[in-house]
Image (cartoon, rainbow, N blue to C red; front, side):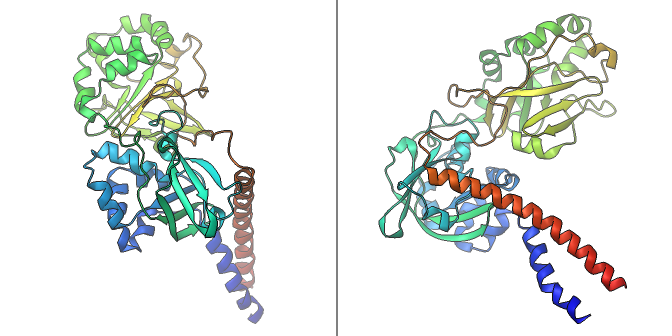
Length: 406
């Protein structure tokens, strides 16, 4: 029994390391009252949810005094979200890794870049390892001019999340550019210019359009079938009654803001604008790696691109028309035309619009240092070790329970 008791500290250590993968940025920052303003705006901009859903992240936190200098600019909430998303790096950087950057500097993609709201490389953050142990940060669109520096580490869970304090907000003209209010967004124009003109034309002359417009400010996610998908579906659409056509169009809208990361983590039933009483008009979100599908009782469609992601409004391109069970039978999907397959874009489009099917970190510039690549490999190796630790700890726990029973 004495030997078994000696196993408890070791077992506890293993179990503790197994749960470190789960993090909550709000709870982490609550331990540091000097960052309450930063914490508050991560919540109201929904960035906190995005941070918590990612497994490899670095948050560059700024204290209340530094946040005041940012708030003095009187940015709108959507614009402030862009600025704060620049302070969230989609890679892990602990204090030690910062000081191990070779060749002095490296470029890292931020969440601002990953969501497609940034133009070109303006969403990348330049991290420079200076002499004397000093580390500076700057937005790439600011000519790499350093004006913010590493202060201290607030919390690190290698290699999941690191929360580091920096001295000042990172300035970026692109991130601070005025962002249109949600209600001012012309969703018809956005769809028409991004390969969903046929669906936009159906919506433009429909009684369903007001429901879409009225939902934007409170949160709206739209799934737009491609032109080829709508054109191939035209015979079925013509056979619907006017009220059924409205229901079908409403079926392609969800009265909530659902970023791609949110969709990936939901994996369940989702109501739509057409849902009312006994008329369920729902579908199921399914994830397979980076691919996200929407499954009805009749057919399954894939998200193949993002037209715009500007909280509280986001629009995706899908490869087929969603067919609800309330209007169609499973056999109706048998004669569907071949659908376009999901494929990430190789080039970024206009500002605020991208064709990638993922909110995943964008590919970094070719100038990334060898040290950065090596650190990334180490991160992957450590993550694998964490998985191994989970298995070992579970096995040890089972063995321990067996001994105690005996």
